[in-house]
Amino acid sequence: MQQASHSGSVITFGPFRFDLTSRKLSRQGTPIRLNGMPLKVLHHLLERPGELASRAELQHLLWNGTPYGNFDQGLNSVVNLLRSALNDCADQPRYIETVPGQGYRFAAPIRSVSAEAQSSNLVVRQE
Image 1 (cartoon, one colour):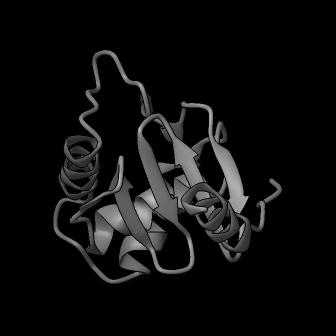
Image 2: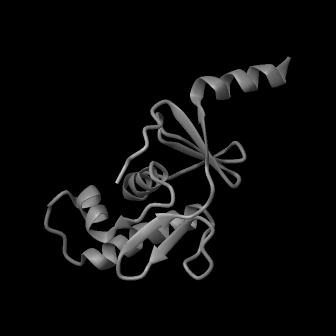
Image 3: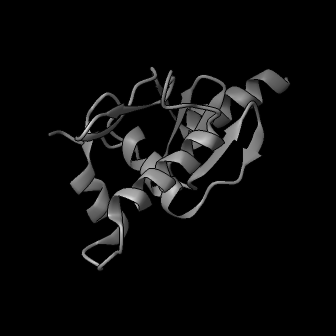
């Protein structure tokens, strides 16, 4: 699997904007409070849109070998918090798609823009 490098980039999808450097999510300019594990999952999925992130891969990402009681319930809770922040749902996903028994993938089209280009575009619009 090839992992895309988007360092210093801003990723947009639907009405959302995610800055990979600052790890900040916003919707039409309004910041969305997202941190901890849901933020890690979003960042991971956005770095490889359309690719499956297996449950085992996400377990390693989130708990890194640390014993955790009920992993399935924990991961489901993390993904549900992320979906809630994105106004997404499992039944008709726009962003986070469940691949039953395997994992999750980011399903929406994304656009990656360098942070510098994003700033330049904002300056141009203000003139």
